Structure formats: structure tokens, C-alpha cells
Image 1 (cartoon, rainbow, N blue to C red):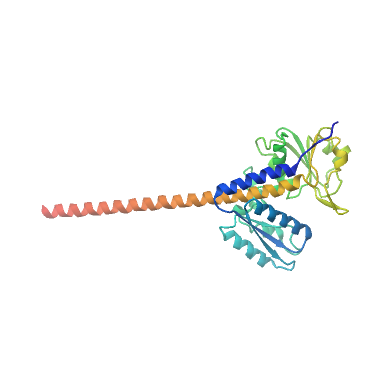
Image 2 (image 1 turned 45 degrees about the vertical axis):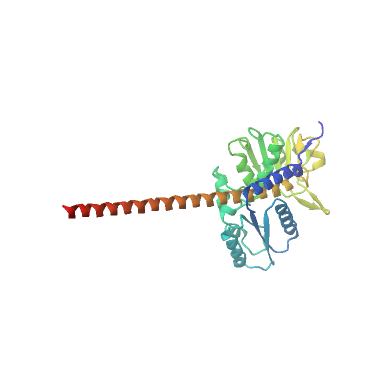
Length: 324
């Protein structure tokens, strides 16, 4: 079989970021992103810096609240609540993982769902499972956007997802089950207790891997012509590699994502898209509220005019009685 098509996440992400920038310009005001960063976990530092640079290039004001590893829950909660109330901050994210001893689920759930641009609150995930997605985690939505813009059909295809984490596997499965061209897939989710993983993977027309184990997927686990999306990120000998044996699998796959340069750039781009969506919704809600207040004021004014007319009529009626 000929060499697999390389799914270029950098190129697609560049197009998405350009669209984001255009939406920011059309918005008429600068969206804001607030990032909570606790501790000194080096990968988190790298991710946050990447998000900040990309956001600023797209016209989004990015604020990073940095805290030491010994920070308490209350201090982080206070910062989240502050940004929840701040109208200049369109989106709020808690960079994961947080230091040991802090309840990450509780922290994330403090984020206002209207500003949950990471799509990780219980509210956002519940809406997605109910088939009414609000904000969706950036990596799953980035995977679907990359496939769509690479002219790879999803509807009606057999998709196998390796990994059931809350950041990729679970939300991606829910997205793929939604009705429409971006979903309507037949989805199988595999995990550490799945027997004969290789046999299940070979049933996939689209194979998505997000297990966090370097080289987990080998060529014998992939069917000829399958589309392979590697969402894994692992450091091996100072190099960033995925969960898929890229060199071997690319000889069997019809299309494959590289690591780095595949899913990673899409994650950042889709996060920025979520921030602008949050800003657009907030602006729409503000206009709607103003229009409602204006309508209420006009109604009240009309009510007052009616009362005045009624009073004048009553006076006229009394004058007529007096004349009689």
C-alpha cells in the first residue's frame, strides 16, 4: 500500500486560528481567557505558555494566575470566582493536573458553565451526554475538525477509541454519537480491561488512540486502509512521541496524524475557538438583556401614560357631574 496521507494538524490549526482572529475582529471587543496554573509541573508550564502565545496572536487577552504547589483550595477558588464575575474574562480554565491534595473535580466545577471553555465541568459533560453540547473539550473537537477538514467522512464509519479518559476518550465517544455529519459513527471504546485489544482495533475504519503509552499500537493491530489518529503525548529519550508506532503503522493506514504536529496544534486552536464563542454568547446575552429592559421601560411608560389618561378622564367626568 502507498504511504499514508499525513493529517497535518499544524496547517489545519493555522486555518482555524485565522478564522478565530477574524471572529475577534468582528466581535468589536477583546475576548479574555483566564488560566489557573498551580504548581511547577513542567509540561503544564509549556502548555500554558503555548496557549498564551496563541491567544495573544489571535487577539485574545490571556491572563495567567500562577500559584505555588503549596497553594490552598480556597485561594484557587477565590480566583475562579473573581473571573466568573469579571465580564472582561470570557473563558476560565484550570490547568490540569493540579498539585496533590487538591480536588481537581471540585475546582473545575467552580467555573461558570458559560465560561467553561475547556468543557470539563459536570454541567458541560452532562449536556454533551444528553446530546445538547455546550462547550466541548478542545482535543476531541479538534480531532473531529481535523478529520472533517481533511475530507475524511465520519458518519456511518466504525470508530474505535483506545482510552476512556475524561479529556479525550469519553467526550470524543459522545461527540461521535451525535446526529449529523460530524457524528453518526458506530463507536467502540477500549480500555485497560479490554480483552484482545488488537482484534478490536483491527475492526476500526477510524482508530483514535489516547492511552498515554508510547508505542502501544503496532502495525499488526491496524487494518489496511484505516485512518489512525494519535492523541498520545509521551516523552521518550527527550523526544515527544505518540501512542502509535508511526513508522510501521503509516505503511498500512490510509491516513495518520504525526506526533508532534497532529492533534496537539488542533487542541490549542479549538480552545481559542471556544473562547471566542463564549465572548459571542456573552455579547448576545447582553444585547438581549438590554432589549428586554428597553421593552420593559417602554411598557412601563405606556402604562403610566394610560394611567394619566385615565386620571384625566376621571377629572373630566367629575367636571361634567359638577356642571350638571
